[in-house]
Image (cartoon, rainbow over all chains, first blue to last red; front, side, top):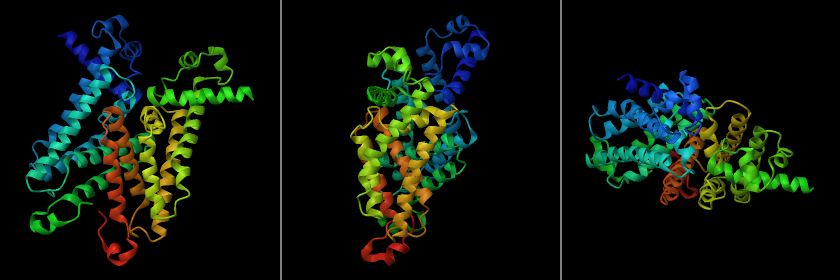
Length: 209
Length: 209
């Protein structure tokens, strides 16, 4: 039991460290120093750096699901939930859930050129996230809330790009306007394909901007 | 003279290495191995890892200017040049100018949490690029080619986000559709604020999507 608690506190600390310094900067020596543990004590929980990196990604995923995804499931399906999911992502960045910005944006750019299990795990996590975003778009479309010509994969790509753009500008420049710009762009993009309940017909005929 | 050529071949190699493995992965030992030079020989050109990283950013900037920016200066000012600049960025990714995707996207995400001269240099390079993009938008607006209500900083933010989104998906997933999606989104976004020469008035009145 105590071992589980220790393991949990190690990965929580590892997630925070990796979000600022990168997953590759996450050495067992550095983490041991940081937690005031011995390296051998830490090795008892994680046999290798790679194992630690994979556990860190798993922990970050749980935190992301709890903070971004779960709160939105209670929102009405269709356009309201899609909009809430997008706002939830921006709010997650605003609240600083990870001290170094979005863990997955950072990890994606860090590992895209390093083949192996760590990159595969990040690729899967991002695939699941974009899949969830795409599903929310598809559900809004099926509910008749979006232009029927909308391509969910295209919109999911664009929304995620805006999220990453917000992460970039708010992290690299500490630009306080970045999140507002992303929010504005995301809402305008969704609005451009939305069919308003009051005048469905003219909405459906609008050009997809 | 020979020294200059050696220095140049070192930084060229460093740019390529850094674009896949990151600027932090760029150790003098690794680069020396790669170039079949002695570490002391390499130290004669760069006194420290930081100096090497800064020279690498400078070299990457020159390559970016030559490959993305310069070819577009011959295109007619206004909307045509703005569109050409955006297409030039996507084409730069498609051609694989840097083997690991966009050097600056990777470096931005890698260093945003590591204060110091390297982060500052990346921040400045990205600031110059977004500034150039913003200037192209402003020139198109001043030429009467864009809706006068357009906020150049907002559009520059969105375009850059789409570029980074393309880099993300094409690098992490090797997704061949990512560049086409970015191109489609960029062109639709520009089109949504464009005033077509033939019917300026109705164009000006259109809602900014």
